[in-house]
Figure 1 (cartoon, rainbow, N blue to C red):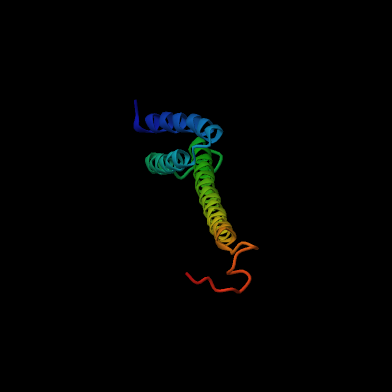
Figure 2 (tube, one colour; figure 1 turned 45 degrees about the vertical axis):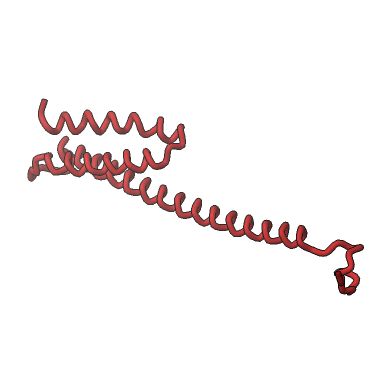
Length: 126
């Protein structure tokens, strides 16, 4: 099997796995898969013969489709990076809110009771 056919087959296999990973929400695995797709498309474009034929030739069409697919993979990687950054920001905001709530809870627990001598300004002498 020629190199280009093997690369096309592996690209089709990776594309088939992409939807399953999206449905599963496995973003780290999807990120790795998109990186592999980008590498395979680069390898495939590198193995295509460069001919001086009109743009309507099959090679030029395949090359254009591969570039389009490659650009789509790169865009998905950027989109995943943006989602990851937004998730990190949301997580930081939640952690800050959690710390604030813990501080409020602790101040509520440690406040003097209404009937205690400390609240009334009286010193307790033993």
